Length: 276
Length: 276
Image 1: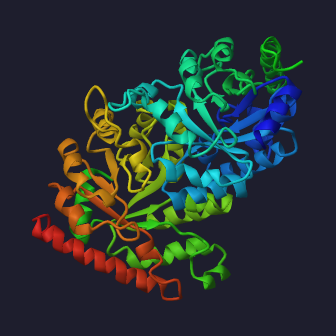
Image 2: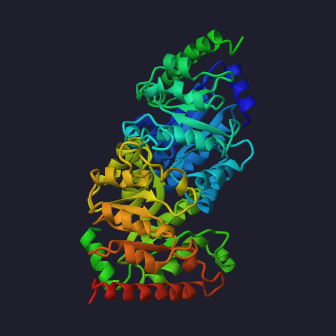
């Protein structure tokens, strides 16, 4: 998917909502265990009930890998199902390795699974990220400023030579590896005011914002500091939507939660003249 | 496996060799494609022929994930086979995510697959690493200084407040998250002289050294700067061993290459009074 197509999708659905498919098998409704693949059935129902309001879905790989090859099968079926809809698909994998190895991760997620985007960790630098950027209309979403407490351990370290924080160096260096057409950044919503500084560096890039809902970020604040002229935001909610109910009505309740967020987003897009 | 057990294993085998199972299906001998699971068959033969000389095996996840759930099955069979031998097993996965998600990665690699150790990326800080440290006799191998060109992008950034390089901050901060009994560090052999500085911080920790062989590091230099009183080194070779031949004699040739390295290591251990 191109940047322009993504913006059009946002305008069409009047939403910049991403739904995180953190589909923990121990948390899904018990009755689904009668299905052959409970996690896929859960994902399918969530997707079918929410795709009207969400522009993106983001399975986090840990929830699938923790179930071995069976979990990987659930993931394969989930991405196949997602491909039936007009949505942007993100593998939240946080991968990154030396060049020839990153190439194989790129193959895993862009060829074998056909995701539109993958989250990548920056620690190993350019050659760990570049192999992902060779795919046309595919995206790297690089970790810049994460939403967890551990973000303060290294991401705020100030560079003696430039005075910049590590996450700012990540933004600046990586800007030349890719472009706003194939690179996005993860920016934790728990630090919404930091978005101001981030937008000084990454004007045009899309930002993937986790941490709305369970992790405590505010949508309004994120929009205030993060919107750009192509929206430039993909805001994720996982548990707040998919586990709104853990009963038989889970998909309907997920739909309600997704609709609530979509309506809030529609207002924001309207006020900011990003939709008519 | 405890640190003491690992040192005893090194003494018993007179080796600190790790073999990287970067078992790229496009590079394994063509005749193996007649097997039901060519990659597992390749791994099995490599392991059977080399386990006498290697104390550790390290499958890199990218080579398995790139083949989807089938690749994951090959990995499951490989770890089951490894468990038959007296070896330390490392999932080279370079994972790391927010706390509850890292817990699931820990489950994937320590419970579901029963690896002894996993490589972890430090960018997201303490709570992304700690869940892996809760398992008794299991290990985190944290990326500190990697062997690739991209290592120079961020890992050498100097901290304005402490004057330390980023990889040194990673070493220092993480030392209190774990201990030399459950934490090791990845240190690229291409920068062997840096080991001097690293040993000033991490005296007692085991270091996992990639980059011997194809990536160009020298075993002698690594030993000169890296050995400690419990050996403290696990030196990895991947392609140099497993793809020594791409013909029917691949396992025998791998055995020869492993034996060569083991003999070199035996000399080093003897000279340094680490074995009798």
